[in-house]
Length: 211
Image (cartoon, rainbow, N blue to C red; front, side, top):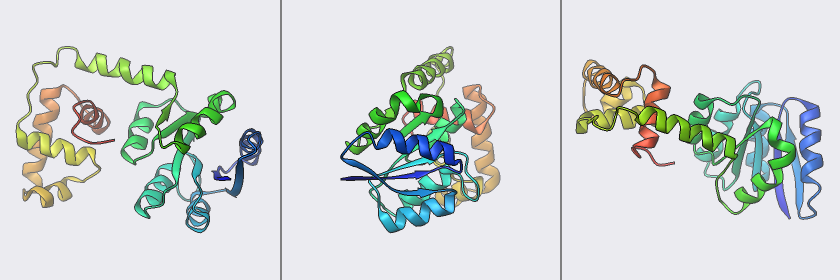
């Protein structure tokens, strides 16, 4: 029997998800959490096979719940649910080590398939999201084929994409914060980007970080 945890602060959403899950005789909803702190406590106690976690929850959001589950080395696979189709959220989710991402509007038709994939330890993203990533990739590749970062710039970009601050990047690379800022600004100028989110997406495309 596969155990599934549902974490969402809306009772109607939890009920709907439970109804879909319970159509499978070999799956059971072994717990429901109404906020991020409850989700972590139940995950630690039950060690479910799957945790279906709403991205936007009080106390601790779904992204932080996912990070905690990973840091505690639980074997639980996380499926993030969100109402918003956001590149930034998807990037954050991937960097947190989450391999399942589903829009709430798609849950009725895709939840079973998503849970099955994660139970087999396969990633799951709907085709709409994959198409969006591909579009962004092609768009950002345009006129950038000749961009070359120095090895130090690549190292700085990688660490920033992994979530390090300028200060912690400096500690890892034995550089001053000012030097890190200089390399970061140089890399962003070469790539023609202006935000950390874009820098993270570049790092994913360039395979500077593992998903």
